[in-house]
Length: 242
Image 1 (cartoon, one colour):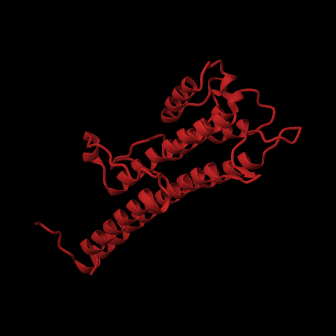
Image 2: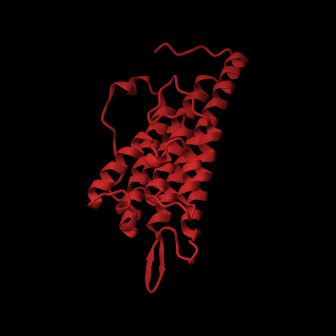
Image 3: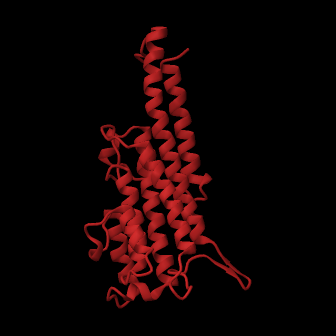
């Protein structure tokens, strides 16, 4: 029958899908899934909110790893902003990623606007920071400007889906954009001469998979709310009291 049984089945599927995708199916880092310490705001989070929050945490972690990888392959970029060592550049970049900030010289621009500037051959600033911070800002904006989610929050499945497609476009631009001399704007994946470094591609793949999962779960949860309500009316299901 419908009603509570359908809702219970949906929650079970949600937990299985969330755990599989976030812990394994998206090629999680070798250290395995990470539990989150108990916090007071978890009391006002449902299952969807937990998946959204953990997916956001892991996507921001992926962007921090991308920042370091790109800075190591393109050290001239972090030196443009006056840093004397990579560690300081990474510390500032990581804080800005988690705050959804954009580079100071690009304030007034947001999300895809920042990404467009970052991949413009004429941009003279720290291209790595602009690219990664643009991605972080875009993903956070797509989630309504939040990095943690609660039962009163509303996230647009379409916006998150669009964010996943934007990550795909950004990955393609990173791999293909060249300057006037035909050189890559940023060095990333490396193929040839017996070397194959596809770690950038894998990191993008993880983010895309998480975003697509959140979009699908958000869309399904809204659909199930309506279906469960109608099923309850149709079958006159009583609610459990124990």
